[in-house]
Image 1 (cartoon, one colour):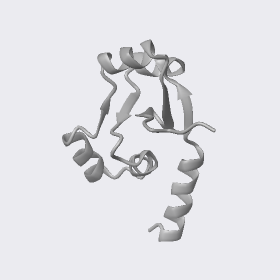
Image 2 (cartoon, rainbow, N blue to C red):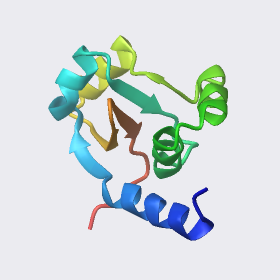
Image 3 (tube, rainbow, N blue to C red):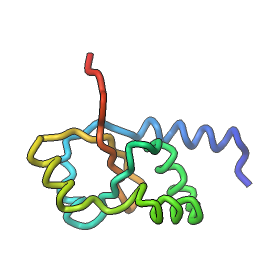
Image 4 (cartoon, helix red, strand yellow):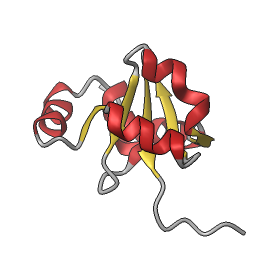
Length: 106
């Protein structure tokens, strides 16, 4: 069994692997069906961590609530046309993406 401290270390590792990236850079993942959209009301790091931990119950709940799922053609086109940047993290074989809202750039 993994200790709480080890889980926090794994969460921190996932956090360090997130990145702000142009949606256009992720087109090949979208085309192959590997891009999953994460609702903005969820924590991207927590979703990535739960998927990496194979927490089927939690992932199934998010799927049933449409909190995570395949990026739709309409969403992909909208991001492409606006040259949007998204938060992303790889959880093989997926790339999790989350729309950036209310982000201040310094």
